[in-house]
Every structure is written in C-alpha cells, then in structure tokens.
Length: 100
Image (cartoon, rainbow, N blue to C red; front, side):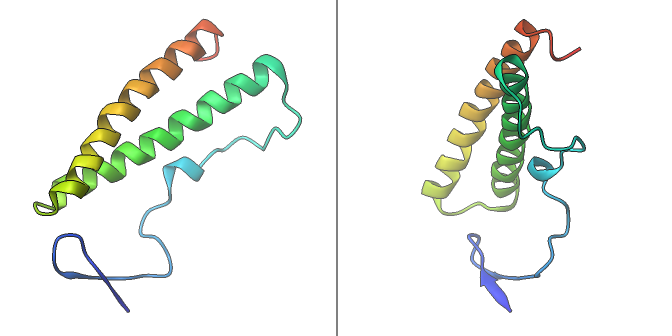
C-alpha cells in the first residue's frame, strides 16, 4: 500500500515503523502512583521526550519537502515552540533537582 506524500510522490506504507518512537521509549516502569514532586518530574521527563519527537518529525518534514508552505509553516512553528518549551521544562526539572 502507498500513502500520498506531502512532497508530491507516493511513499510506501509499512505496518511496522522503521525506527522506534522516542516518545514511547521509557526504560522505567510506569509510576502509576506517583504524586507531588515525583509526578511532576515524571510528567516533565515524558513531555520533554514527546516534544523532542515532535521536533524531530517536523524537522524531517522540512528536510524532505519543499512544497506546501502551510504544512512547512506549521512544522517550523512546532520546532520553534516545542524547542522553547523543552528549555522551560528542563529548567523546571533543574529547579526540582531532577536532571542530575
């Protein structure tokens, strides 16, 4: 099966991803019962991973595609905003002495 590409050609679709999704790779067991500071730290760590994956996807689009300015624009917006948010969340982890 082939999926339409944003760049004008069709791209083969695979049922299995070529690379694992970094946002879903957390070697720690789930902390279902985290509260307070621990819950905040876990949330921030997972959101940083999620945002990094979003930045990587948006950058991949920009690297591979030259048309559709509206899609390129949102990809650039995602890169800018989520990179800034990563910095904010890293500062929050630092304030919680969690990133050492």
